[in-house]
Image 1 (cartoon, one colour):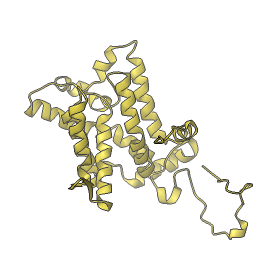
Image 2: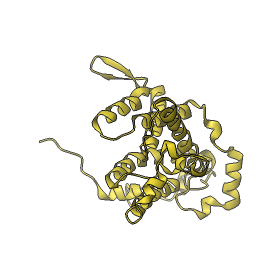
Image 3: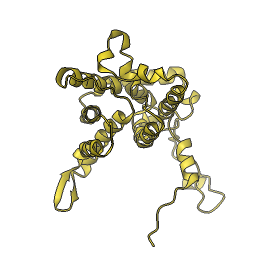
Image 4: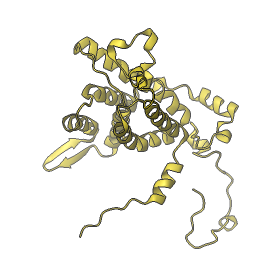
Length: 262
């Protein structure tokens, strides 16, 4: 009989405990907002992106709609899809960059494009919400990275460009999952492609300013699971030792094969 991979609770717990700070915060906000909609049902309508209701007084919707979900299953599926992608992004670019982008341009840009398409071209007013727009944004970014190393993948006799994978998923999900926003997912993927190509990297605050903020506030020392913007100098968990030492002076593990550190 075929053997199926079993879920290891210890590995899952270890993975959750090692999630970086901004990823934790965004996931917590999603769960908290879903919980808040149980007694306060009006919150869902307040946070959703409704094209006809976006004006100067309700621009906040461009940042709140990815954090709000239609229901428990909608939230859970989006969190499961988003968590590994968001964790990888934060580990690469740092906590401050992730926080700045996902509370700003990565919501306003795809949301703004969606409103323009809905009102300007489709003449519609379809409400959207959910973190899937971020899922496709990050998938598109990862697909372009993978495309550089592996330009194509094969399905039978066909060779398909790797960068098209998120677009294929958008089409498939639109057919098999009811009430999903095809246009919204395309908007998210489009911003992901622009990010990976470097066209919107100017949206990230200057690295000198980010380093100054980290040093001034001692974020590495004060915030657990914080990821520095300078991975080469600080690493993921703070300043790494740089003094060369001989192999004989390196402390040995008390047991054969035991790993030291996280």
